[in-house]
Length: 398
Image (cartoon, rainbow, N blue to C red; front, side, top):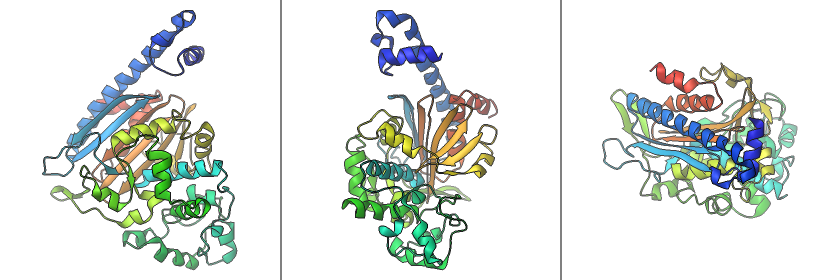
């Protein structure tokens, strides 16, 4: 199979279909449409499972896209933007990406680092001089790469409660002077939102260009992500946006769009449609090398810190042999493949994006409700794609 894959790549440049084959290689090209048909079959199976769970959990609205190489195999939507109203979710409906925003920040920072605008080993205090820990020397040990890999050494989610109280980062930053990391930077994992978002200051000081402008000019425009934006104001300005919903005793209820985590824009501030996420998946899998070079992709998917406790998650635990974090991406080893993954959850929204590094098949899911079903859908699909048959089993058990 490896030989067939290699010959097909030579013949077609990873494009689908036998029409790209030379006569010499025609016998080998039957592999390509067969594999594509297999992914399409899995996509149809996923669609049934997606709709089944969305209906069962009475989730107001959502969307998904499945990408195989540089091709969209399936893209579909479900439900309404606001429960009780007629406006349906479509392929351009904008959702909050929550922590999936971190994949944008990690990628943007890597692009700039590879352009030598700054170095991963630079001290964060060179860009954010007001950052202080209780032990001053520890502040000087914090490097830029520690921000994006959650390896600052701090207790997880430090001062997120202040974000949830709508406090801007400028009001939160002084509080770090009251604590110390539990381990030296780079030595242990602790998920952060406030510290992660300091990459915005690094980018502005290193380039003189705002993070928002960098995203638009370097990612959104060249990738034709026409619905994507950054921040609360941009989200509210969209006429085709999903409303957030929370679970109550009477079912899902639409609530107002909170500003809270928008203050931590690199960590949770990106808005996008499912059409945008199709483009983002293709770029992450290497099909827009002028936007994300192979070297940048390799950098952001190189493990910086182990996250072994994630192997205990009920959905993943029977399948993972290792778990780590790169730069804005979770890295899950599964057999001889890796799943590059991130999820997001904030104030009435859920989002997930994942792809198989070996198979070059990916999925993104967006929902306007705080439902854990998104983790089930994402994990079962990627586990199935890697050959474990999890999706078929999950459907059979429903």
